[in-house]
Length: 306
Length: 266
Image 1: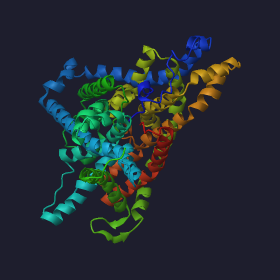
Image 2 (image 1 turned 45 degrees about the vertical axis):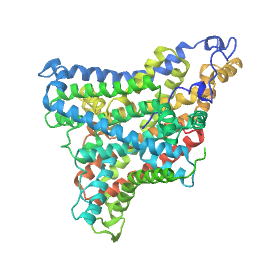
Image 3 (image 1 turned 60 degrees about the vertical axis):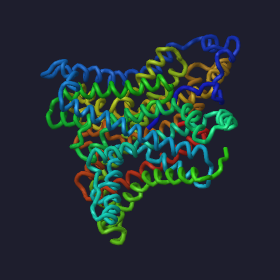
Image 4 (image 1 turned 90 degrees about the horizontal axis):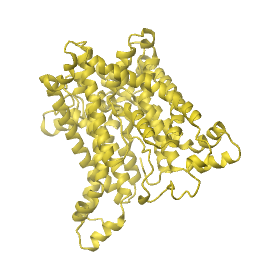
């Protein structure tokens, strides 16, 4: 689920709700306005969140990091994600899967998102609602949706049985996981693309057209470049979510070899807590870094692994 | 913008409809399967509510626990998140940005990692580990950023500095300003954040799967269990129950988003 952006849109994009300090006039900065800056009350308001967050996130994360280095391998456990062939294999397939999901989702969502922004027709709002509705489905439910489509009693199996006589079942494999992650990512990527496409300045497009650009040229040289920040931020969200998601893989098959499943297996079946800790710390660092990098490029909202 | 409706329009419309079908068809199929006597035979075997009954018999506790955790989580995020958002809106320096970045981390870091961290730190405290509060702690971490961001977005969009200045000039103290000026003005953000928190907590699985115990099973944990070990009809009926529980807040969220931000900024 995409977080709402916390920063107001830049003034150049219209709707400047937030007067810049210069416009507020003389003596209207925070320091002068309220005479006091209320450091104590503000600290008191922040304190509960700070305490809970420190106790239940920062401290545990630090502990996880230490535990990761406390196993039989010592701190080398952090290198095992690259040195242990099984872990490396799992890392590579997870990255490939996430990259593929990101590419397909971006392509699909851009076509539909642009179409829905650029055309008005009866039933359009119903389509938008349908496309964004699965936004809050948890990973397990997404997994079940894949089973309904491509499982043993699934629709695709029934259709292929009727057409070709042989039943196509791919839910319980990497292909099923791929379908699930695309399903999961389409709603949030479409929302990002649509929000960004609605803010495009139509005069650029008109200028291109008046200079004789064909429709595909307008799309390739005006619209797509203008949407690049949205692609970056939505793509990072999509990639990070696919890297860290667990529920869908868990529902489809515990045999699918992606990093979250590897961590889960290390933790539960092998009781190898140090390795699980090290791997999940690395995974967390990777997803966080992917989102932070994209945000620094795009300056937009981050999102969640559901 | 008006465009001529040439072949490109119809091709894109068809594609969009296909994508819609991909998203909606499995939902409809699973809802149908939940009320079909025998899904393998098909809808002609008749409609029934016996699977929903069965779900109620097997999993009523998980539904109750999920509601309990979701509302407790909402209370926590309101108490922790709304004041924190106000502080972050007042302080706009590098420290505030860093704190905001930190608060958002539990959303960026996979739930599996957060859950493992909680287990290695607090797993030894048996009573806490076994109670539903352990799951609540995870849910609060995961949902807090949504409340904070939602309120922060509203605070950034209104000029609450001027409003507070007016109140202060009339002699209102800090608490009076916070309760009577700031809170009423960010109500729409609080409402959107609350709906988001409820929906997310209700569906949270990544953290909860590791944090739960046999006595503290939530709805998504029960769902995973039913998908793995029950017949398709029961899993479907259970999913149907889940949809019925989250759809009202999803619809409210869409209405809020449509009303508050006409240019659909999600």
